[in-house]
Length: 113
Image 1 (cartoon, rainbow, N blue to C red):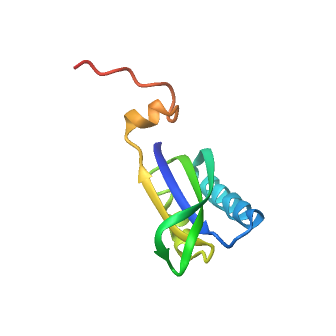
Image 2: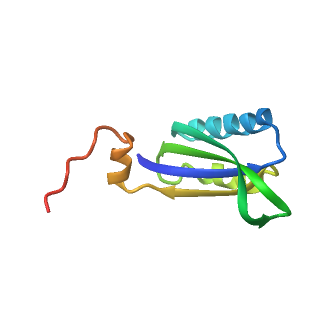
């Protein structure tokens, strides 16, 4: 298992129920591919630094995910095709950061330096 962080920016014109529906679809897709959404942080509507696709604000959501390598390929593809999504980004967390956040089991021991 590896730890990932995924940020999704939804269209700011959407209502919260539509955003919640997409969040549920993403969570279900991760689970179907053998992963686990450990945490979902809804950061709310925020103004963009610059206009994106003629939009000035978006609804930000950050997911912390535990999954096998390649398990998020379908989620990535679906988010690219979703009309509700303005941008998304998936990064793999370093093991030390994953342990600090409580993902992937117990906290890692401090390295001697």
